[in-house]
Image 1 (cartoon, helix red, strand yellow):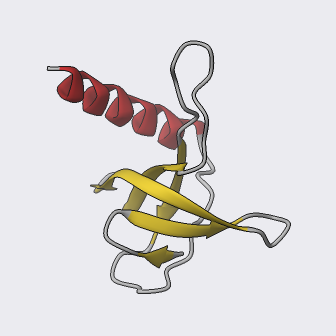
Image 2 (cartoon, helix red, strand yellow):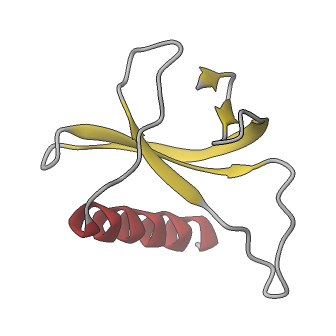
Length: 92
């Protein structure tokens, strides 16, 4: 994972690089991890005008940090709550 200003380059399972825009990052003391929510710059909106947003955890402070999968249901619930709060703030 490479950081630009608000962009990261994500490499998928097939080794393809994809430029993604960072929506936001946050830390969870409960899980002791940092999380990033992002979406591909090339992503097209679906018929509802929404873009699929992806999430992963990472180790902060690493320039070429690796995105790690979010593994537990509990973590996914927390990430979804953070996203909903972020979206609510953006709409105001």
